[in-house]
Image 1 (cartoon, rainbow, N blue to C red):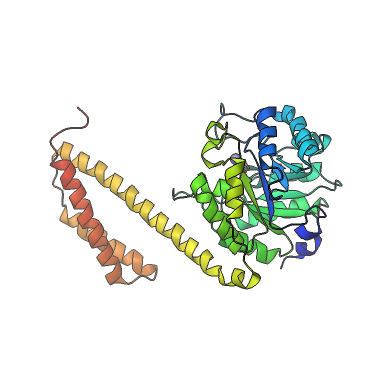
Image 2: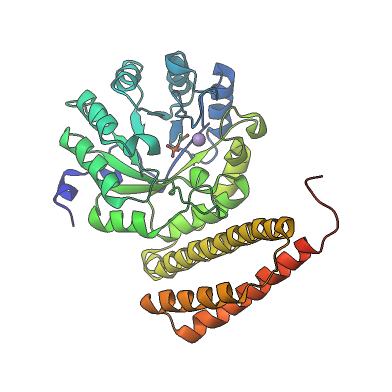
Length: 367
Ligand code: PEP
Ligand code: MN
């Protein structure tokens, strides 16, 4: 356990919620006043599932020219949501100015996005801006799977005197494109929970999944792993959303999803570590598959080159050398020589088949 743990209040002591898990919902981005209010109205009063309304006001986008958020103009829309529905509101802040503007407009909870947590200068700027202010702060994991960077951001915010802190798990960027937009790597948020047991852990299935049809499954997994809440993006017309269209759901569909979630008792939560290990195996299998697909695409380039230069497909010396090198590499990693040999024989047969198909094909794609 980390010394910080004692300074962090569990969600139950925030004085804000009486039902758990806590559900946060709202659009990825506040687009127009109508869209914000329509989302809030859509989420309202349906068995009081949703307790906090989220909306991105300043959007960190990968490339310039994409919709970068409405900015301060959207903050009064959130005040209106509060007035009309009684929801608590939360907003992503990435600079000191975002903090000042949000506080000026009585936003209830601030959150740090994955692209902010990754940058200690940005986190420190925010920590300095909220010093002495009593406001809850939720901290998303950094984009890269760096546990210490996440913990460091939590420490910076805690050092500013903030005691209502929650973590948000939104998955991690990884070189391999699996089913997920951001690989869940459940072991990392679970390690955070072990390090800071007082700190609530919210799961953000929207940014993990990147597409609607995976949300139910990932939300259930997070509850099975004893997460304390969910943050799920909702939009009245998801297909037309100005950001993250593929992952947003209508408020009605969100309600159906939430109704279908099974809350587990503590005992079941314990045994579901199996789920963590399975998801690790899943990501590794995705990496293996991704590597094989990448390998084949290079083989195709080689085949085209051999065809152009009129070279033979099988170059025995190269194959012998490659096999011995791989067996040696595998052995240094603790893998049996025979296992590696069998795998590489199959890979090699497939490679020859792929090359043959390209070299003997009549048409030339370049013509
Ligand atoms: C968001 O919540 O819309 C967002 C930008 O998320 P993240 O920081 O997790 O990418
Ligand atoms: Mn989003």
